[in-house]
Amino acid sequence: MLDDFMIRATLAGVGVALAAAPLGCFVVWRRMAYFGDATAHAAILGVALSLALSMSVFAGAMVVALLMALTVNLLTGRGYAMDTLLGVLAHSALAFGLVAVSFLSGIRIDLMAYLFGDILAVSRSDLMVIWGGAAVVVALICWRWSSLLTATLNEDLAYACRINPKREQLVLTLALAVTVAVAIKVVGVLLIAALLIIPAAAARPLSRTPEGMALVAAGIGSISAFVGLRAAYYLDTPAGPSIVCVAAVIFAVLSAIGGVRALRVS
Amino acid sequence: MPRMCWEPGRMSLISVENLSIGYGANTVLSHVSLSVNAGEIVTIVGPNGSGKTSLLRAIIGAVQPTKGQVIRNADVRIGYVPQKLHIDPTLPMTVARFLALPRGISSAAIQDALAHAGVPNLATAQMSRLSGGQFQRVLLARALIGKPHLLLLDEATQGLDQPGSAAFYRQIETVRQQTGCAVLMISHELHVVMSASDRVICLNGHVCCEGAPEVVASAPEYRALFGTGTMGALALYRHDHDHDHHHHDCDEHGQTEAAE
Image 1: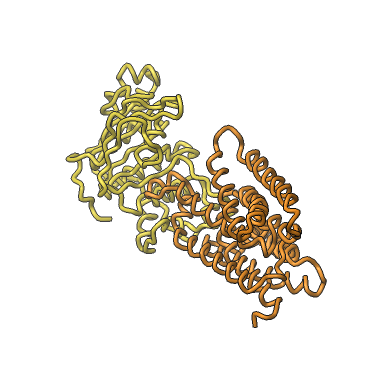
Image 2: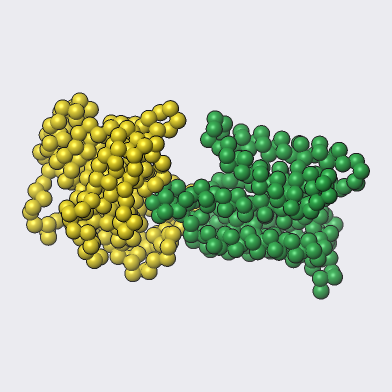
């Protein structure tokens, strides 16, 4: 069954969507969209480094993404506004990554594959890495769910419940780095943030509880991966961007329905 | 709710010893000592920037003191009502789910806490749809749900109009009578606070003066900060703590507030 590249690609897409959904909800609730972007952009530097050092791209991207996220955490509240800081770090990391890749003249690499993903080339071992990483992320978030949610609501409320919000922030940072690393193959570094945010945002009008929103987001992400891949196959369009396009259309439709419903209620 | 195991007036639930807090070069609080005994209502008053919120945050463990310590028996359960709670509109949250965070709580306990806070019918409402008064009462219900020995309130009536905040403070007093929990609160509304407190602590970077409301209101340090205008309000609002509370009108106020 796994011999078919479409099946492997679909499984890869769904795997990433399942991990991105609950994490994406936190990214939306905590207004960390830029943070996700910055972490993802930094991953291209990780790709370049791991190719230069002939180590696993997954490991290299994860380490650099993690370092990036930790740096942002460390520098927050030290004189620069968060969005300025992220703008500087994210784009510098991307630029340094692109320059570093150009030095790798000995190895011919397809930069596009890392910027926009290469989901149709997912191998069996890639699939194992993706599902392994996704399982780690989902397990981590399920384990810390209540604490994460309390810390997201209000830091002082968390302290009063003997939860350290800084530790929960670290859990999210870790989950983000793993998700970025496994998603590079699927949508590439430029569109990872879209896969985090769009399904979660689309799920909002349909949800009454945080748990409901995470589940609906997982469903929307999976459908986007499935439909997007098929659309890419029949229309001969790039796979990663097609997945994001389907998610965006679902978001637009659900928001419109939510808007009409809100008008009727009021 | 069951009576608390701490006998009123016998032992202190928490005590703060020689506490100093600073952010960088700024010293916010220096050498503050105080304690709260079981069952008493203690109010902290003080001008803006006097370190009131920092003190409360140090008690819940959100701020590390630069000097001194907060002594809090591990058995003492604390309910905390923060000054401001903004829930992002993208976060869907029913009142019942909010109350059950971070630990699962039975729906009976949720109903019980909502009833104590004066908003019995809100369990299935979305947090984002609540009015200001309802929101504060839900925060109170959340603080009550762990059956605390001590309630900490940081300007819990911010954003409420005067009848609303008066009703809220009467609710606090009712809660104290029903559950026996102690209350440590910060407030700007001097007249309301004076009438509802057993003890008032006047804070301005350090403890200026401390004692029964009448004593503090006539202290020169207090008058220097707040003037003498509050004396009349004190006489007007203060009511006798020894009288029979069975026919108190708290519940009625609670419902009026909730219905708004």
